Image 1 (cartoon, rainbow, N blue to C red):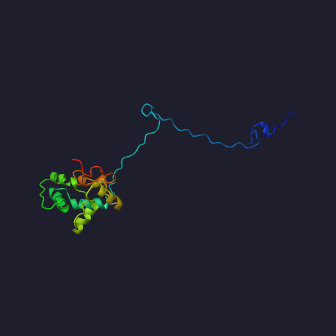
Image 2: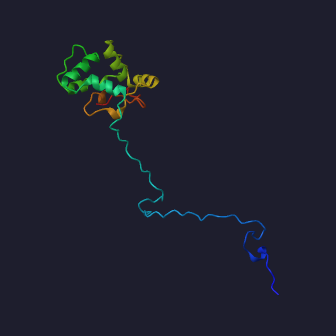
Image 3: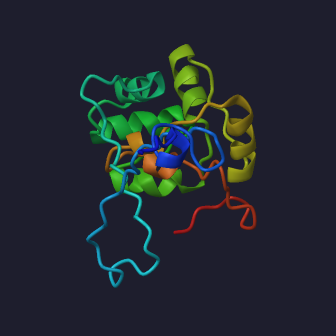
Length: 175
């Protein structure tokens, strides 16, 4: 005589040992092993890979950059001499760009305010120190983007350390 076994006794068809249906489990996904050696990267972490930001060809420069480029032109000696005159160097003769660069070492102006003043014909406000210029510039958020300075531009001399000014030396530039 054959005896029929119940599903519970057969071990299949639904309920487990405790009488409950077992949970359906999905197979675990495994990550492929990295082939980099630990000698090259001793911590075993993946190094950050960042792409340098590239300026898109259709991206317009900020207004302040466009205004500066319009004001300064191609950077000929005449452009430098006009800059020196607009900064208040009246009665001084600058025969070379090098002389202009040297004279700019102690000049502290906000670039946006300078451009606005030259457009309106008002005198340019000059600050006493880099720290004073920094405090003003941070409060009004009129910051020229350092990445947009072209090689040989007077902005390289005029641009101050706005975030971390040289406080101990009175904001004077090194020569």
